[in-house]
Length: 412
Picture 1 (cartoon, rainbow, N blue to C red):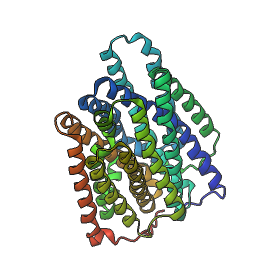
Picture 2: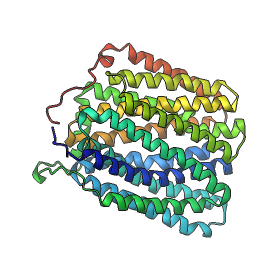
Picture 3: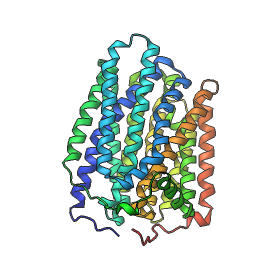
Picture 4: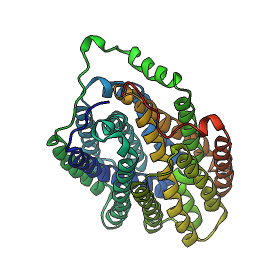
């Protein structure tokens, strides 16, 4: 087991704060772009196209970026990816006044989303793989929960800021805010001394061997390979109730930045509450129980989103949905951090990032165009039912459910 710095709490706080600062700007721009496209087009196809550009590059790069996180400095990868995203955003901001046609504007937004996606695909595995180097294993669930709260609070503020800026100014203004937050986050992270893992060069595999070793570590652990498939199914079935929520609000309750902002605010308020709950409580001793409880909650609540036609009740359900999502995501992350050797964490989290973006991409490609011809409410009820049944199915899978909350790993 790697020796953890005695000042790990201070370093972990500064690390997560630096990532939170850049997250605020990135989330601000993400909401602004999605809302701009949604209100301009009211098209599930356009929203799906934006999602493809936002996640396909991340899916592809994640297969190798996880190996980079194990091979090279995680801090350097995070700094470089943040800087690359900022540069892509700056280019878009400078070009924006020259784009006079809506088609050109939408095309530029898709291109910028693709470039930002590459940066995110490099950054996320490195961030997740860094956490076990900073935090003692027995504190991982609570720290992940606390970090989820921090991220949710930041994401709670981002849609408010996005709605205000778009209402009072323009989409271009949000781009400059992102550039400023990126500079601040990069500056703070550069000043933090983070642990490094020195692996002898001769012991490092290369190229496809890195990627194969990540797959091999999953294949060798039946529990984790099953967990990854379950996680992918969760993301796929969450698309109508989560990632097409803005489209449902626009069509059912009226298209305005105010309604879209409220929807995101209540959702992230729930996520912040869920992270705070896990930070204090720590979840069930059996991590799988925490995961399945969250998945079942997401399924039942998605059915509720599709069945009701009252905006205020819709907002109340969004709060509970946020809690359930945080429970599910945090449990998956912690299970992987506890069960994978530190020198393989980057590769496995790279695969996890690929599963997330790949299944989200599949879901948007499938459900986005279908949402132009089939009621979104119907899609939510159907996928919510499937998600609930999936959680129940795994609850009665004794081999999966009864895995100990924490397995000893001699390599960690």
